[in-house]
Length: 282
Ligand code: NAP
Image (cartoon, rainbow, N blue to C red; front, side):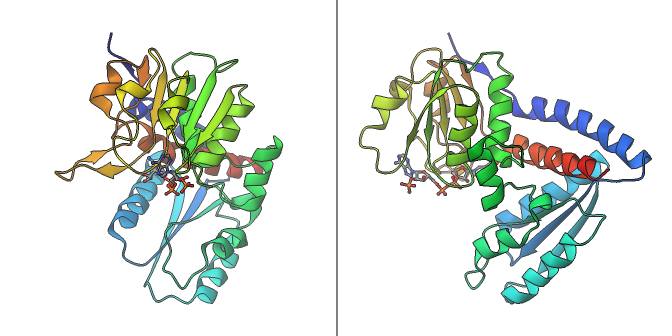
């Protein structure tokens, strides 16, 4: 039987409707949630992401500021702007779009954002809070994946989850969130010799690699939940994930599509983090 689709667009709409209601209530009490988005350079994909984030803010009733800088912006000027936003009471979240031009150290930029406004959840403080099981901002993409898994109604308690990918922004925080939900977690990466050996044992697979057809039908346990984080282009330039969607749909129990799965959830969790940051200031 073909897998059930996990619809990230529909789930996003539900969560964003709730965010808009809470934002309106907060605004009525005198605090309008505010997000600052910084784009350095002319990377076309980054320009689209940034535009979508600002649009989502407007739709949720947030205040937003978009700073666009030339790729030649000195690092010191960027850090100075972040410090000014750290001190701005109308801003509750600061997002610096990655990747940055090569002359700018991304970690220095991330660490300059105030811990209280790190809505991307990328700082050492946020990552450390997650690893220690303490409250803090959760990285938006893995947090969105958790919401997608929750939406299936399947409990993670006692399940085996396999995460493919170990980046600081997706794979590692994903593994920690699954661990926190009492799954038994395996993390695979480019040095894993036989990926299928692990994925075939998994009740949940999260693929966060950046290479299409990394997960094929023969690598999936019947009935598994498959979450596809990847964003790639196929031979004709169409957006696709890391998972062979047509093949894996025939084996899995649940699957996210690309587009319309993880992508919309990432921006949604950014809104949630910004809203919660604003709520904490009142
Ligand atoms: P990344 O930093 O490049 O990390 C990719 C990970 O995949 C690395 O840990 C790498 O292992 C692992 N890997 C590479 N080849 C592999 C293989 N053959 N078998 C197993 N593991 C392999 O990428 P990322 O930032 O985590 O993003 C991953 C994908 O998700 C990309 O397509 C990205 O565009 C997408 N993404 C989507 C969203 C969204 O909102 N939908 C958000 C973020 C990212 P090593 O560590 O050993 O190199």
